[in-house]
Image (cartoon, rainbow, N blue to C red; front, side, top):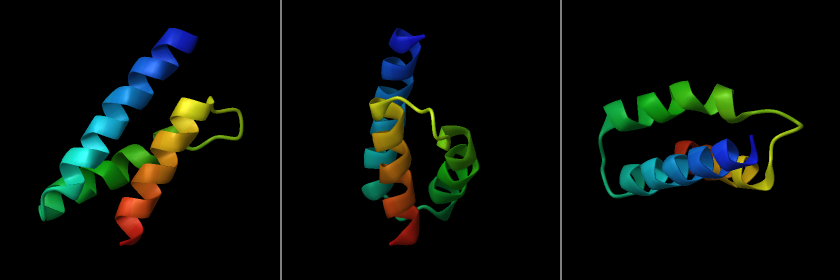
Length: 60
């Protein structure tokens, strides 16, 4: 499970960085759809960091 969390967090972070470089509303909408799946009190540090990155991007 830990390996999955790390890989998932890395892919999510890459998606967030790609979204930062584009003005696409569609990309932001897709991240907004992904965000609820990253929320949880028991999330690993990598997942929590990815979730925070998504939230920061969506709030800007």
